[in-house]
Amino acid sequence: MSALERFSLDGEVAIVTGAAQGLGKQMAAALAEMGADVAIADVNAEKAERTAAELDGETDVIGVPVDVTDEASVETMVEAVTDRLGPIDVLVNNAGIVENSPAEETSFDSWRRVVAVNLDGVFLCAKHVGRQMLDREEGRIVNISSMSGFDANVPQKQASYNSTKAGVSMLTESLAVEWADRGVRVNAIAPGYMRTELVDETLEESPEMEDTWLENTPMGRLGRPEELRELVLYLASDASSYMTGSTVLIDGGYTSR
Ligand code: NAD
Image (cartoon, rainbow, N blue to C red):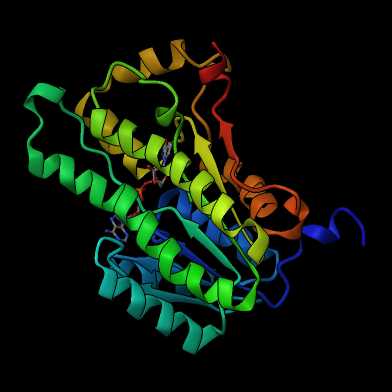
């Protein structure tokens, strides 16, 4: 088999959480392009349907409602995707939120909201999709961490976000070690600043932040969401068959300074 053929996802089934927009949507499009049927799983059910309709084409792309913080909702999502598309080969745990505030002023509710989506959500989806993958001894999970799990980036104050993203990388390692000899690989991607709705919201509130970000990014620009596509394909396919437990940084050099 050629190196390029090892990136094929022909006939496979993938779930991407939080894929109604942003990085998730780009990654879902890439998985579909390589042959996978894809579930766009998002708490915004209406937008998930719209995105699915936009990406539906050569392969089946469907919208599925899910709140990743709710275990029953995650179980319903797994059942719905399995019924409609078949057993799940690839899970991309992408749903995430950020709430910026100085740590000493952050309410416990805000802290818990961020932990619930960014860390509990990754655990719950990995647990329920992982069970099915372990039964079949086949599957790949890609968790979306962040460079903020490695570097307390400035000027925004986001202790909750940074902590959850560091947690995602350690959860990735833990699951990888537990499941390595049972056919399931678990890796993570840690992006730097990518221009999505999430980043636009932050910049609307504090446009001056962008200058600091650019000064601290050796490549001198933000990433484009589509620049994640090839990396997710690598980690989601047999192309990365000897890789598990890794978090790959893709940040224009930010964490290398
Ligand atoms: P985004 O806000 O554009 O999209 C996030 C999606 O997640 C939305 O569609 C939202 O509806 C969904 N979502 C939120 N809560 C959910 C829940 N409880 N259940 C299911 N879906 C839910 O964000 P993005 O910029 O595309 O970020 C995607 C991921 O990448 C996040 O995990 C984020 O932390 C990470 N990330 C982003 C950047 C960046 O610069 N954009 C950098 C590093 C990491």
